[in-house]
Image (cartoon, rainbow, N blue to C red; front, top):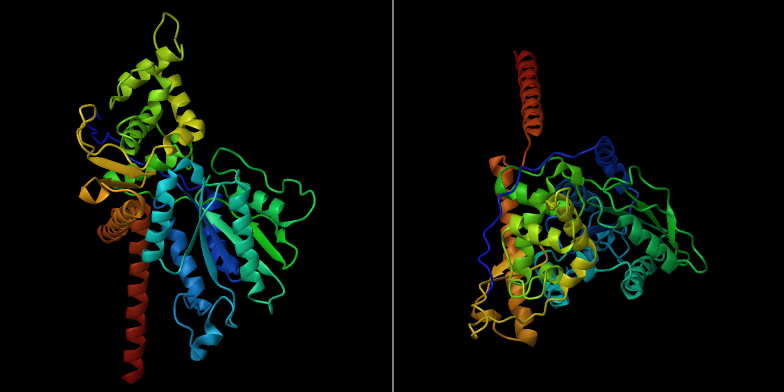
Length: 429
């Protein structure tokens, strides 16, 4: 029987915004001025949480300055000089790459792609896994085709951006290996820890004909993850994918949330059951789970006491690797009615950003199931955008430091306006 899944208590999110992230954020507008294609990487498990809203503003301004017109808009000769992608204007494309696609169930990939197209028609969404040559080849061909549709440009520059530890350097190494003939040595160093890339890379050649170059950039975390439950959950999600330094979090809190999410992904047979003795039931209690896991792995302290801290660290690392593949293998159809073995399935999820109530529309297969999942995902996207706007309006998404800075800027603007008014009054007197 699926366990009742209470939402775990989560700690307040830490602030982690090193100096190199701040420097790159200030450099971004100038860098975008010589960029033709923005390749934004997100983690497939967190396609909404790994959006960096601070980068969104800079990208939108870049596209506005380029006179961007969505390629989904009908062609008009009067706008051809300001259009993108092959109508005579500057190249101005944005590709969102959902990396590590093998860590999410395949049945949700196409519904998510369609949901994103419905909500963000000016973004091209591409799922990829760096260990699947087919995914890298299709992305490489996408970049080459954009360059070929602009034959008057001598070269095309691609900027790779995204949150920390979403796989930017690894993807660029793979694209370089795919696009350059012959043996290509690894150009960029990679690490499992966030913050390894601390400065903009030199230009890397991704294709020789046409010429396509790319920059690798440091991962940029949000300066402030937000107050309240939403900010706390956002921080734990990013810590689980190693987007935030793990030392900033109590690992037991990560385990509690990970258990909750694995129970949502597959309430009938969660992935963590493969680690416990056969016949073990699902659980929502992190302490009970860690006790059983420590005993199973023979992680004991002196005197026979279970080493639950060590077991917790092992469990999180397991999920980041082979455990993620296990959790992604969940089938699209799980029991939704009581059949004598399972209780009715009440909630379902995909990745860590999508969770919905199971209703009559989900009791189907094939194309009807995909359409039902797409509708649920669109509702989740709408809710995520609504929550972000609400946080912005209420100030929940703004840190105390940002509030002081904003207040000081408003005060300076007020002084400047008053001085200008006094000067104008003297001139007219």
